[in-house]
Image 1 (spheres, rainbow, N blue to C red):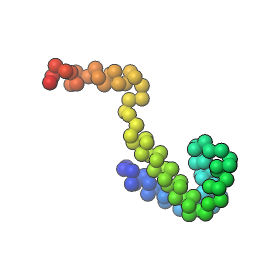
Image 2 (cartoon, helix red, strand yellow):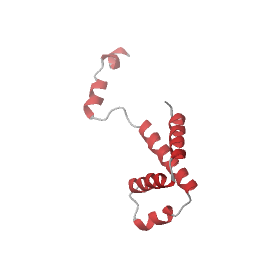
Image 3 (spheres, rainbow, N blue to C red):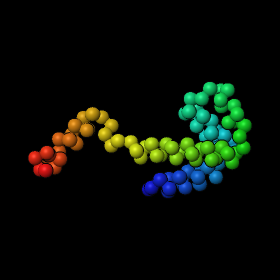
Image 4 (tube, rainbow, N blue to C red):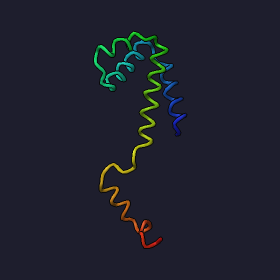
Amino acid sequence: MDLQDILEEQENMLEKLNPEQLNQKFEDMLNDMNLSDEKKEPLRRQPLANKKKMLLMHYKGTVTSYENKSKFDKPIEYIQYLSQPELSVNKM
């Protein structure tokens, strides 16, 4: 599944939500962003269409940062990768 497929899936999911559910997702996003209440308030007053757009941008940023994440979560994984014989300097 590529980025476009994931975003289309998220967009379809957002379209199926009722206003209350959409506002809850939006509130979750605002909490993830660690904004103060005074910064959240003008965003909460946005129309639902704008909230959907902001949620999609948030999902896109989340997915993109996940895709760019290194495949090595722990130092030992990187060490093991570098220890593979096929990566040996002597083979060059």
